[in-house]
Amino acid sequence: MTNVLIALGGNVGDVRTTFRKAIANICGMAQAALLARSSDYSTPPWGEEDQASFINACIEIETRLDPHALLFTLHKIETKFGRDRASEPRWGPRTLDLDLIAYDDVTLAKADLTLPHPRLFERAFVLVPLAEIVPDRVIAGRRVADALAGLSTEGILRLPDLD
Image 1 (cartoon, rainbow, N blue to C red):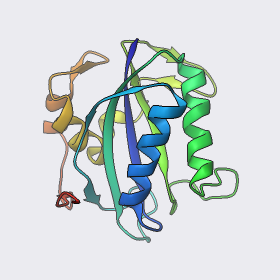
Image 2: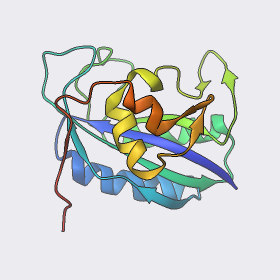
Image 3: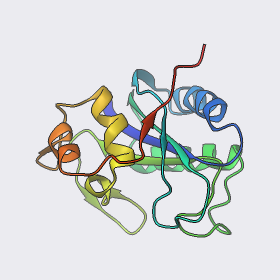
Image 4: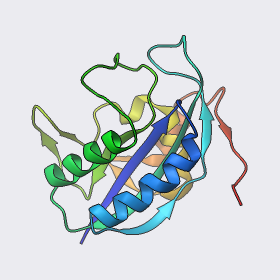
């Protein structure tokens, strides 16, 4: 089994319900075991700032799928929840964004997949929930909690747990 970190994001529709259903889909379709799930966080939009705030979270899973098969599965789940990657603007509004952050300690640089995620260390909206579940995990030579310490977390708010 391979240890995998996945970031979830969205700002269209009932995002928290979408997350709950998407995580169940990830576990089922990727034949994965859910090891940890962060809290949900309200975060300012990144890249394209003239849009609603996002909700972000991270999960840690174990799966036997190879990285490309897992990415294919994540994209299939995004589509199931209304995402159309082909027609949406980059960094624009979306129902669900699933990013493969780390796949064990694999380093990969392909046209369709780079591991670990190439912009991980620039994004507090990913590092905050990641640090909640795996603060001591080392990715590309950097401890998650240390990488987060170098970024501003202004505007990132932990949301209360859902019942």
